[in-house]
Image 1 (cartoon, rainbow, N blue to C red):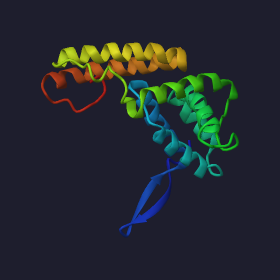
Image 2 (cartoon, one colour):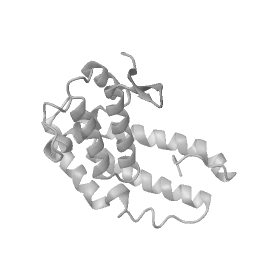
Image 3 (spheres, rainbow, N blue to C red):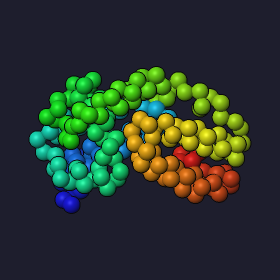
Image 4 (cartoon, rainbow, N blue to C red):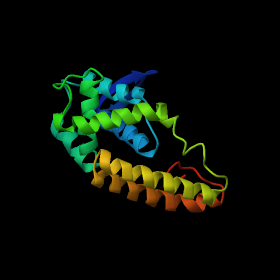
Amino acid sequence: MSETYTDAVEFDRMEVHVPSYCVNAVYIFNHLWHHFLTGGIGLRQLCDWVMVLHTAKEVLDLPELEKYLKGFGLWEPWRTFGCIAVNHLGLSEKEFPFYDANKQKQAERILDRILREGNFGQYLTARDNRPDGIIRGKLHSLRHISRRTAEMATLISPRCAAEYYVHFLIHGIAALPDALLGRCTTLYGS
């Protein structure tokens, strides 16, 4: 794998190393993917990702990018969201790494969901109905994420949904003692 930090900018007379375009594209996509899984994203997040891809079209290290995407379990969602980037947000097929037109049907269902749920899931009722109390709140979140993960299995892939669900459960269980003691510092499993 090539160097993660490949460039530097000067900031207040200091050299600051910045992530490569490849790392930046994967980081932004991973972030929006997790927001999508847990309760909604805005088109602004997708546009930020598209702008990085457009800016980096000539310099992306495709073998490195593929390695990251497959290593982080993002290969399927990346290609599915790519259809939204190309068919709705103005990125050309040539600019989108690993474009797969066969993902278009899934992408349309995802875009419909994003628009129905509103910016960061503002139209979801699950957040409004969260009960008071740590345990009841955690159980409410578990029900919400369980339902959402089952839906995601049909939108993207069962494997991606299952991987996320296991991740959610592990972090939720790990955060429970701190939450019970009033020291909750994580949003996972909240």
